[in-house]
Length: 77
Image 1 (cartoon, rainbow, N blue to C red):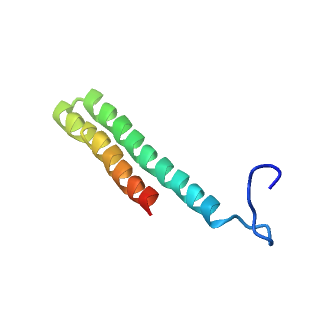
Image 2 (tube, rainbow, N blue to C red):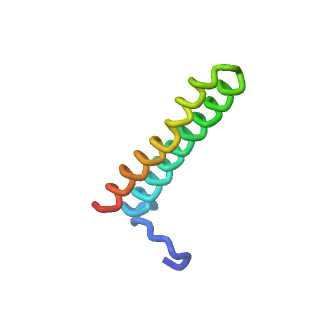
Image 3 (cartoon, rainbow, N blue to C red):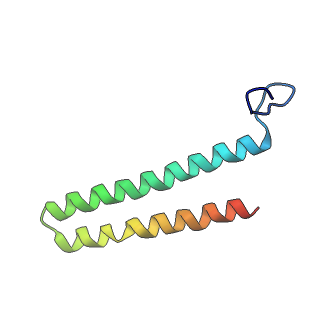
């Protein structure tokens, strides 16, 4: 534990490191989904269908909120 990380005797990551890695992956997936929704919204809006673009744009805070809710539940465990 000289470098601040803990490894099992066989060199694999500890349970805490695995959970942290899973959390980072989940966060990246939610942010990617929100980003793609934003880009799609802008493209549809600029493409002429303004109402549909605004509707898709409303997904962004919903995706981020869902991600926050689910990841917060992971922290509580």
